[in-house]
Length: 137
Image (cartoon, rainbow, N blue to C red; front, side, top):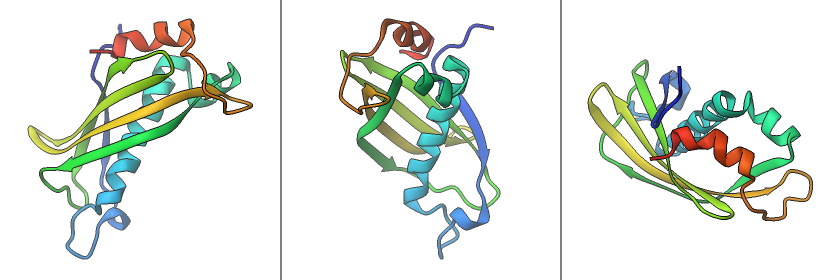
């Protein structure tokens, strides 16, 4: 099966992710974004570690979220990630968190590609572009 955008990762909200109001604490959504990206790496590269062993890494340059609803303990949510832009050295991803058809959170992350040893900014390698292309919108 050929992967295509968006990449979707389902997760179940754990009790410790909820605040005193019984809702997922806002900062945890950024962890959900990262978890979905890590799972996309697994599908595209074999694992995040495989990407790093190939000499590539990414660092977060920007992350935003717009909260439209709230997940609660034991909810199953889908975290959908699409690559909106592959620039020369950066990658922009759009993220949505949904419970069924209900949109809970919209997000965006910008990652800058770096050398895995020196962490100096670098162009996105052609092989990485090819592996990420199916997830681009």
